[in-house]
Amino acid sequence: SRVESTPVYYCPSGTVENALGECTTTITIRTPYTVSETHTTCPADATEYPGATPGSADSFSGKSAAPSCKRATTVTVPATLLPGSLASKAGQYSCPSGTAVIGEGASMTCAAETYEDVPMESYTTTSISYESSTVTETVPKLY
Image (cartoon, rainbow, N blue to C red):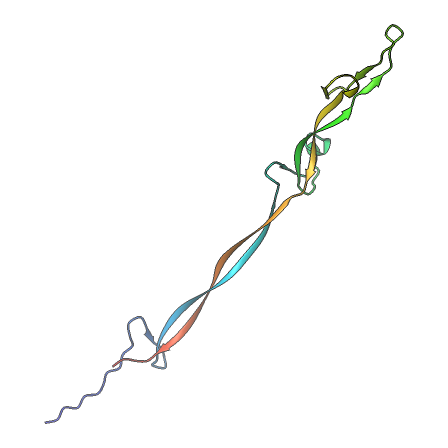
């Protein structure tokens, strides 16, 4: 006697049979792309302010302006020679109030703390992100 067999077709594990009788599977593809961002910051020895000189009327009035970088610095100006009096013919050097006196006599200077504007520094960061898309693949049936 002769036994005839017909092959049994089936879909591999991880696939599903669609309406057309095909074995399909969904694959996710991740495509990398570069993301670059430019940032600005103040140099290490400077401080960022909201756009007004620290201590000025603008800095308390809430006026909005672009932020800026300020660095503390010392400025010097020569002392002023005040004329002598009738009793003392010699003049006298003097500094404005709120300044520090450096030296004496004709070489006397007056120093005060102030802020100078410093340009912001720019730097760019780069990172990789991924965009996902799905593709349906058809695979052959097994038997």
